[in-house]
Length: 168
Image (tube, rainbow, N blue to C red):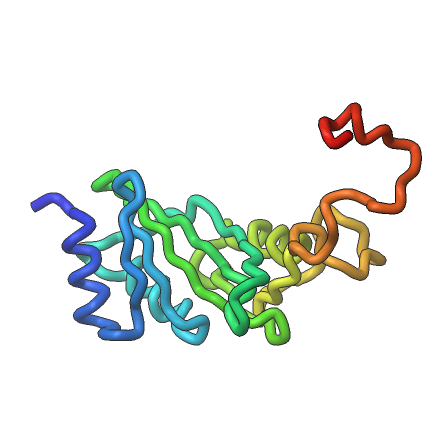
């Protein structure tokens, strides 16, 4: 029997109950979320389960949602089952005050650089990571450039003519 999104959802619900929520399907890709304390349990289950076999980590990224108090930062995992050619998206949310999420480097060695990049740009700290430091930006940088905390343009600039930008 071929693996489907319904089977994946059923296996996850059987194992974790109401700890996995927010099931959606966008363009055929199943997405769901779980509390950040369960990220390794869910990832390990997706990897080890004989029916699911999500053994390829395609990507880890982060998203900043400034309008969601207590859930401002999200870690997004994209996983791929190469045998059945099916992909899923798994999200965990954390508060911007405590941006700590357990590292997945023990399960996927490819998580190493992706977690460092996510830390570098969004400030999500991957607890247990073997080398959690900036990877692309300079160490002296005291902010995280992909957080939506800054205006898109400098309002004090006087060298711009607003008419050139359709605002005059």
